[in-house]
Length: 264
Image (cartoon, rainbow, N blue to C red; front, top):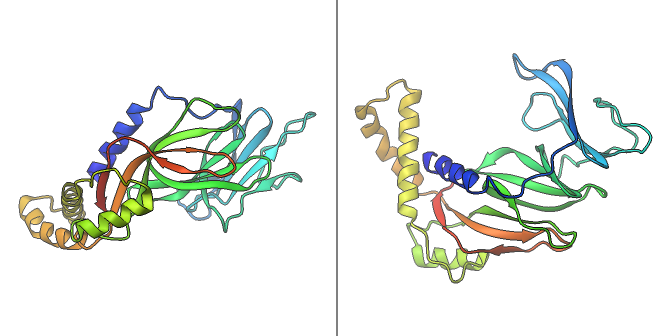
């Protein structure tokens, strides 16, 4: 976990000067009172107003927003920020995607997943006019928007995948399978031993802390169990990619560091 957090932080720092999400003209939050599912928190409606539309997020304190939607802005008056559904509100199908509002770029609306996955976070991209999902993937760290090419939005990020095999146990066959899946044909296999060992150490330390016994004796007892557990986990591969969010988005690997660690 520590390795992943450091990697995410380095990624964030490296793109801090890059093009980012569009800033909303303003945001409004409406308090709906105490959350029905989370103690000491309040349910709320978050509304993000952009030039021609509003993104609405209804958060009742449960895992994932209760409703995510896109509301076109009429010319006459601004829509109210309320839990009630507007007549022209385009609701994101919860059977297709659940999570939270992430940001807007041009005519595209980005949403995060409702939880992390293997050290990264899933995200989805929707067309604000049609309300249709045009792309989804999982990433570690931030999304970096590349200089605009016409009306299409391009971005670069560190993608993560579950390799569906265990690199430390069957290196040649597993790496060949991952190369075929990802398009990393010319890339060298990453060092998985380092990532697996770091994950095992973090797991052992976490168990000792949970037992209020963060001592060398506890660590020595837990580390072998943690190693046995992580060595049988599929390999997660993190690698830099670029994608243009046109009519047929295509993920293209680009030069950069590859990393490997065991799946959760």
